Image 1: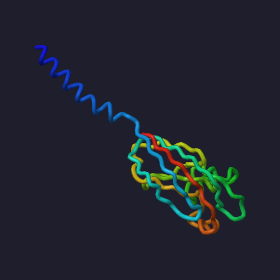
Image 2 (image 1 turned 45 degrees about the horizontal axis):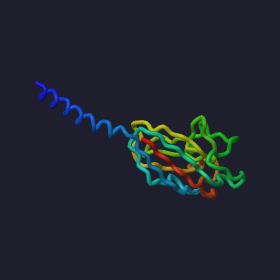
Image 3 (image 1 turned 180 degrees about the vertical axis):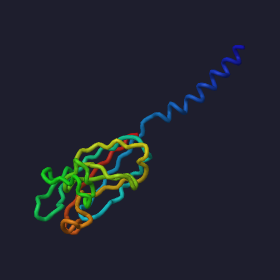
Length: 157
């Protein structure tokens, strides 16, 4: 009877071991350059749903030659809320912000030091771009932009 109980216990431990190791957190990071005058730019990071992405952007870029250069948080006084010709038109959207997207998913604010909680349905390559009128409804779109940001992206799953 003891031998049978020991066999069951051993089987439970073996089955439980892979589950415990799969629960370990995985970390990856990449540093990339994001140009102000280009559309969605592919980052060498593919996400499998769930986790957290942290962004650290340095540098300045120009989203409009009549405005001063800005960092990843964009121009605090120029909202893109409701302006659907912009890369991101949510309530916290600003012209010149660093914006992210996973696969073909919805854009989100990455900013200078942003954090994005990856949802289970967000699967695919990470893309970054400037928040600008890329449809050219209110100006030259990306064509009159200049500069770039250097962005470190940390992904913890």
